[in-house]
Image (tube, rainbow, N blue to C red; front, side):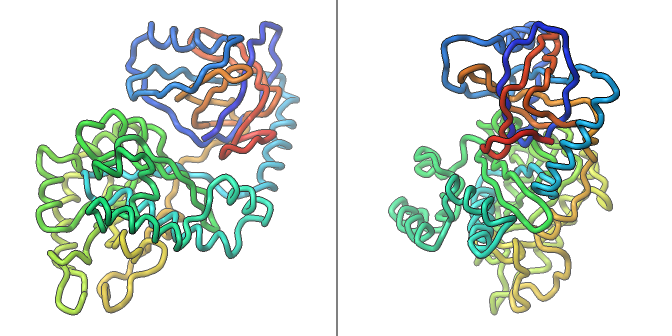
Length: 402
């Protein structure tokens, strides 16, 4: 998530370079009065206030750079060069969607577990590793053992991996995700922000908030007997989540067929059922095609076990899944092609949240351009001019963002 601190700027405007932002937009409800009211609140107040929670129906205001003289393009190029020197990898927001109990939080927890193990062995520069480790403690074996004991006490032995993502006590007691969980992980090629959306139908607005921020969606399907059918039927959330993601602009969808190691579908000797996997793929493909996804370009199907981690980062064993030769989830994410965000274009960032803290802090996902400290931006639709006093990327202060 990217944030920057702004202050009103009535003076004549100078140009502003673009920026990278990692927290994406929340869809507007189309109410012009609500948008105007939200923008008016951006004006600086002397009284600091806590950050409010944002619902999916909250108004979103767009931020754009005020056009500047052509010679400032050199400044933009230099800023972009410095950002690439700092870390040349792309950043992607990934939302996990699907029916309740499909294994979304367990998959998110498994990803954090395996990447934190790798991060302790290396990383993108030792200084960056140490800083991130201080902000986000590693998920080590001792932590997993603690979660296993806690899950057992709640009679949810198989839920321990989900506790990495579901940190709220209410979520752990109920056994369902309520709020959109956030976490970060890295590969050699890219940096990712995970958005763990709730699967229960009562929390669809929260799911919309997560999907609106995403570059790519991972649709988690439970292959357990009865669970796939329940999720895909009219009352299930598999259909609704896939349609909402497409409507919100998520054009790439990775479908992971989870729980193939479950006792209800696994074959003798522990081998995953190719027949069950093929039936699910054949059932989902026509529906996803009608939802607007191109089966050849936009869809990737992967059999996985979120609990054991097979085909997540490392390939499943030949004993478990000898019939699958495709990519792992990490390989699929690293190969996803997303629309380019031109660094020299005017800065564009839909606002998803704001709060007061020595000025106004606004958060959003950069859709184009760069933003730097000192830039003068314009908040639409009220054309309120603001000056950027600070920029934050991954909760760390930075000179710029793209």
